[in-house]
Amino acid sequence: MFGYSFSDSSSAVFVGKVMRDGSFDLRRPRGVTTAPRVAVLRGKVEPADGVAVVAVRYGLHPVVVIARGAWLLFLGLTAVVIGPASLGGAPELLWVLAVFAFIIGLMCVPSELLARADRAKLRSDLETILPAVGSTAPERDA
Image: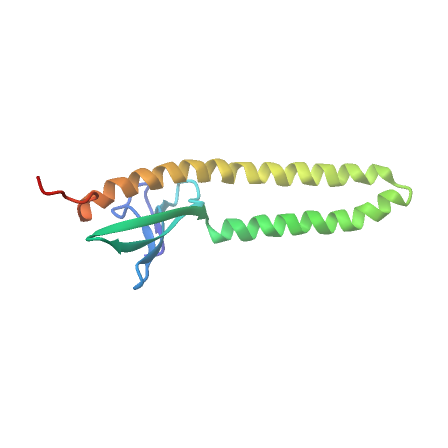
């Protein structure tokens, strides 16, 4: 229901929502003991000449985007405070800014690596699910 299960396995391949206009926003379910699912699968199913065309776009989960924005805002505000102070006679304060930038950069790397792994799994799961709901290629008369 909420996208969490108490084990690493779940009966659902995807959790998320499907809208009436054919668009969808899906991600893999997360177990309590698994890493966060940071990639989401957004797309739309559109009819075209008797077949359905599935257009898909991968993106980061909104919580990841908000967290990155908050950290970058923090870094920017720190630079606004430390910049004038370092130019005013305390250049050693630039090390504080460099350390903060390094740590924030390190916090962004794991989410990118997790998103890359999630994208690969989302794609393989989607390719597995699509044939189950119908033909994935137009049938031609022989």
